Amino acid sequence: MICLTGDIHHDSLKINDQRFIPDGMNEIEICGKYLELLKKYNLKVTFYTTGMTFQEQWEEFKAIAEADNVEIGGHTFSGLPRKTESTDAATGLPSCSHAHSHGTYEDQEQDVQKMIGIAEEKTGKKLLTWRSHGLVKDENTEKILFVNGIRFISDELNWNKILPEKTEAGLISHPMNVLMDHDHLFHAHRTCEYVERQRKNWPFKDAPTNRSFEIDKWGRIVRAQIQAIDEMGGLATILMHPLCMYLADGFKTAEKIFEFIASLKTKCVWASETEEFLGKK
Image (cartoon, rainbow, N blue to C red; front, side):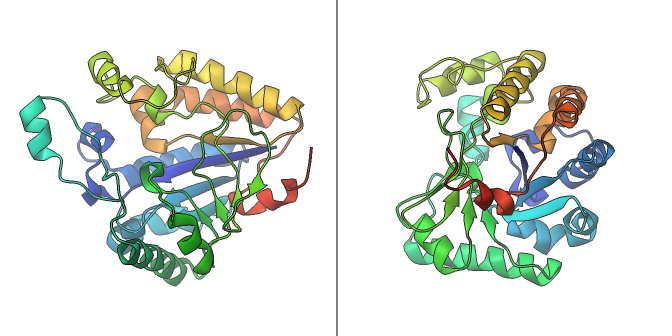
């Protein structure tokens, strides 16, 4: 089985990748084109989306959020904004697009509640799934999520876990167990120089998780991992950002992966459907 996911951000967040979008386009428009490819191959996707996307760009995003093959998950309300202009100017290199802390317990709880509230207001559906922006979480995150009705989370990176599991806070975690795109792709601002600077503090030491790849090589690794997990009877959770896929090669590799998934004798599930894998061995 496969859980295909993507992360989507509001334009005003000004993440690094957004700086490389061609004039006249934005991340939501790119996501719409990506969704058309998913529909072509009859694939389902969970889009983890910032709450401010609903607040600031609902008219653009509405058709995506209401598509039959789309499930919406929370991706924080604000996207953990961080002013990067001064750091960029001082170093000549782009800095991280998000803050590394949620702030106080109250700050985090308010952000979660605002995310849930606006998503449910706009879609009319209960928000059940979550991925923290930048995978930034602390000892309070899962407790806050559970108390506020979130039941599924996909924040862990772990290639050794091929099945979801229950966390101490009561959430169902389905780890990203396939090489994710953004931090392992040369694209946009992620030049060789940037990657070498980042690797000094990169927590994953084993190849290939400590490396970045050209898009073709990354795509081959992803297809091999998907097939291996599927053959073991596991759940392959894949993170592919529509924006990354567009900037890297105009969706060429994304479409190869979609075609490959569609050829397998398996099915795609939403994040909220991963509970069926609990207890399997």
